[in-house]
Length: 152
Image 1 (cartoon, rainbow, N blue to C red):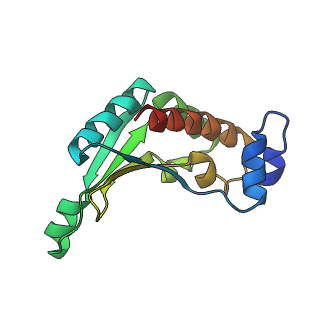
Image 2 (cartoon, rainbow, N blue to C red; image 1 turned 180 degrees about the vertical axis):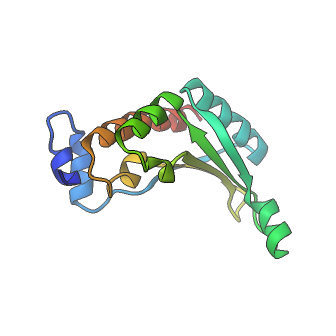
């Protein structure tokens, strides 16, 4: 079944279908926050926990760039967020899905000093996989990540 056919099922999100058809779907949700970088890390971690996510990885890109390349880079962290029940279900219906896990959430300080938080859109990242069961799971995870972004 193609992704478009899967979206056409009765329980599919009509707005998502229209966005896909219009080729306007993005691969992330982003939001600027009026707080400092470290506070944003704390708040996103708390908001993720409230939605059932744990942090599996925390990559400090600024430190990695300095150490590996000797270059200065803005504050930028990649948090690997996992919602265990959803990850388990996804692994049951698609054994190679681990190549696309966990859901990355980034916190970065833009050149202007504004802090931005972004999360992957799991529905967009799963569109290449023709598995309607996986699309259902991705939709549930998307809703949780959107709730996290609203909570910031």
